[in-house]
Image 1 (cartoon, rainbow over the protein chains, first blue to last red):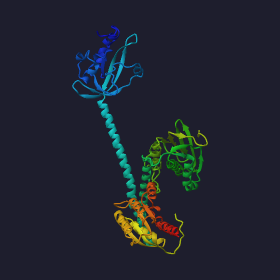
Image 2 (spheres, helix red, strand yellow):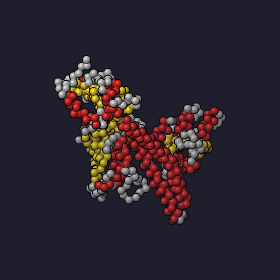
Image 3 (tube, chains in turn blue, yellow):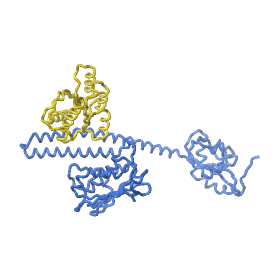
Image 4 (cartoon, rainbow over the protein chains, first blue to last red):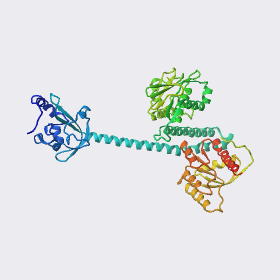
Length: 384
Length: 151
């Protein structure tokens, strides 16, 4: 005699009115009793398993619902353990084999049905075809891999172009210098003028190639050396030392707050300060530049700021300034390439940080950047 | 940047190996030697294979003169300067010949790699004439340091 613990008028009643709803939903639903025999199948389940409900009724669920999975609720245990049910028994992926032998990848879950006394009255398998989803995910992986390859060859390209462009440019620059020297003061005005364009053109091109190389190296994904404990104060001092002539010429005042020690590459922190401070000097206003550098701890990251009293940046340019070769001033000196902030962005993003600017025209600018992750407070305090 | 004493006294380097494919740069190296009054018998090789052939020939034939100094471009056709350097350093006759590695590269990695492979000095080719001619000062420094070491 077949034992049943389904109370007539309760679960059966519910099943009766839920039947049309379950029948129409797009997920496959297979109901079973505590013996693991099929008591219900909706349209989607019939389609995926290849079994008609009438034929499947009373059959062991493992015959109707054949799947290969890590953990098989339709196999040895057709009801969930208390713990499994309490834990929500998450969805798992499995390969469903239909009656006709065709396979589809499904996501399935099993839910226990309970009678009014709280006892297990059976269970329901709910599953859906995720073959399409998987294909989309695979596609995404493939696109990512392609992107990585493209990125790699771009890096290779820019590395070799820095080599290969550099050499002929250097030759043009030096030999036009030699040529003008040979022509001497006896050369006519036009010749001298034309030669100076050649020299300047080569110099300018060289500056771009240099900038491109610096930009590529700033973001190189492979870490040549492991991260070090960088004392930002020392990095800032090194940056200021390299900028000394510009600082002295402009009469800039530099004010420094307490700076932390972060996990990074010191050359990157140095470059960040160098680029941001030299920008602050370069885009100073009438008054001598007043530049303040500080750091604040926010949650799991350090937020650095470099503020100035310079000419500021109109709001409409705020996102553009971090672009490669963006310059907001007129074409001027040949050594200017407008890549400094792009390099900053690349460095900061390499550490999964952010960089942004707050500025108003004629009101100075504040450049912020964050270095998140394993940071340690500086020796002198937490910088707040 | 050089610490060499400016002197008009010519210094004879003897046999100098120059491995450089770009004739424009060979011209500049010669100008740099001239600027610093350095006399030399130059053996010029213009690709990596020719460099290796010359290195091997000197290594085998003990009657052949071994250069007192080598100026080696990193970006040589066929066999890179880096590989030539390693070959020099693993040989007997060349093992302590001073080698100045030159490159157009702007990458710091190239410098580190060259120094690790046994370069005596590294010269990043500049695009300004006067700066390039300072290669002469570097060659002179390296040659004199070598002589001091011998005494």
